[in-house]
Amino acid sequence: MKIKHSIHKVNGYTVILVPNDTNVVHINACIKTGSLDESKHNAGIHHLVEHILTEAWKPCGKDTCNSYWDKKGVNMNATTTSSYMNFYVNGLVEDMEDMMQYMIDIITKPFLLESTLKIEKHAVLNELLTRLNNPENKLYDAFNKEFFIQSYSADYDLQIKNLKHMNMAKIRDFYNKLNKEIIFVISGPKKMPNFKETYHFKEKHKDYFSYSNKIIYVPQKQKSTILIMSMPIICNDSYKWNACIIILHMILFQLLRIEMKVVYSVSISLVELPSPYIFIKSTVENKHTVLVYNTIVETFEKYKKESFPQEYIDGMKKKYKINYEKLNYTSDFMAKYILDHYLDGKIISIEKHYKDIDKMTQHDFMRMMRIMKMNKMCVAYQGPIKLL
Image (cartoon, rainbow, N blue to C red; front, side):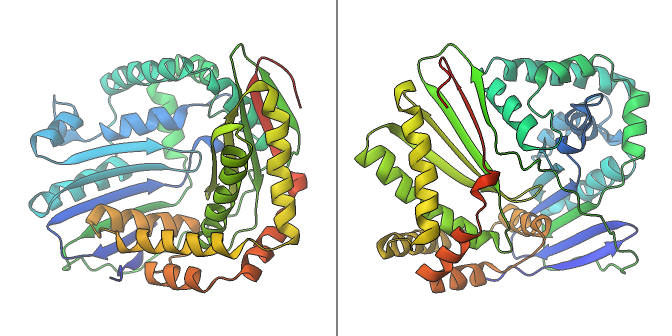
């Protein structure tokens, strides 16, 4: 099944229509700004604004908007990442008009109240306090501050400090001065509204990476070491890189878990925004930290010089086919698929994904591995002993 879509530029906003045959409507509103756009003085402001905007609709009245939509049987939520704030509602066609108005209003003309700010500051504070209980936050904070030019996304102490000084004047000033693309994605009935294209948003590319290749140690009294490794990559087709990463995971799992017996698991993933980078994580016994680190580096270097074993390539293709056959084309799946790929810069059909990956050869993967810049790999680890 092909996911049809049309992109419209309307009054400074991007509107993507995704018609389908279901009786469920899914609407996203995405603002292309996140925690990586914050300074030390306003760290945490995107998270707070996200909370406030979800409640910034006058028809909700004395109720919270969450309660308002619960009574209508509509699902709603929002999230903040390093690169964007994303809001959504999901409900039946009969509530589409109200859902549309809600999403348009909270993004383009939010109803901001002091009472809402007070409530949401408490909610955000409790959320940050919960995150502070996780000792891994120290590791991610240290890593983020080295890997990116500027990042306070895991500095929860700083965010709590800033939260105390957040007032409505600062919130209004921040939101009014945003000069970022705003994207609405509407996945619903085949009969969709018509839009006249009037404006195209242009945004300058910003480099967020420091390109540091340092090894950072974060001391922590614990019985194992948490190791993370990451490096930016040049990525034109992220789905091909995901196929490459699936194979790398198979190989590393076989080496580290099955043969060497030094880890329970190792994860490797492609993070696509704000710009693509590979992220690896594993928890190991302290005495095996150096061995695991060296094995991962040596494995990457090895496959820059020689091809992946064909059996791993064949296994990856079968896994990909299984996932392709299992796809459920719901309104929320189609909206998320189109939005994710729009943010990534290129909307490619699922059918092309599958066909392209099925054609990939050993040579294709070796060429991808060769452009990895190992001298740009940033490493951070947390444990009781400095080992690297």
